[in-house]
Length: 366
Image (cartoon, rainbow, N blue to C red):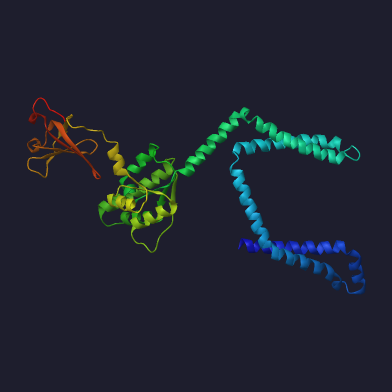
């Protein structure tokens, strides 16, 4: 469409240019034609010239558009290799040189014969000297260079950081807001439209628990948009050929080269199989939990019995499960235990321990 408009525009320009050119080139013939023919018929020579030039512009405009586009692309590619501060400093030097040239052109133009040519030569020489003078001393403009370097590094970091696509589960979970506040979530955060629709369906659910979870997720998104500095973008893109939200998330991540943020274990595995980057909030939480080694002592409050006979279950402040062998008789009490082993799984960390009294005084750790 754009090329078609340009083609019509160039054709009109060619017609007008040819019309005016033939009026100037053949004035005597035009006057003679107007004398011998009616006035309206005397314009046939300019009309013919306009038609010829219009047709020339009409057929050559596609090649002209392609040539201009290629030249613009080549120029843009060359300009990208030049630092921004060099371009701005060079432009400033050129402007200063041109202002000096304007002041000198007034007396130089009064010199007979060579005045106009001398003023043009002086302007060109001053332009070259102004650009080279500024660029050779660009280190002295350190305040400008540091500003542009800072801006360019921020832009590069922004462009190089992939977008984060939020899953429904991680929005409802709520920990994404706390993580974003700490500054660990760099780059743009994307919330797909189909995720918002799923949140709305959950918020409208007749089940009280689901309804509260959906409303909590919408409130968290609203708070993140209004009160936080992170950029949250709503992408209204859907895939009608896919009904599952997880499949749509994977397609969107593949399309925009984004990273899915979730705490869904199954979605995490599917993303790994399809080569999609994923950030799991549960894995992050497990990674920042305090490290517990076998042989360490801790206090644990036994709150219930375990699956095996005689086992007691306790939980640390961060939610880590502690399985205490022989701890069933201590249910409801806080006892000192010794860690025997630590099991790390994808679902979390489990600590196995025994009451401290069940150990001999010396424990050999090998």
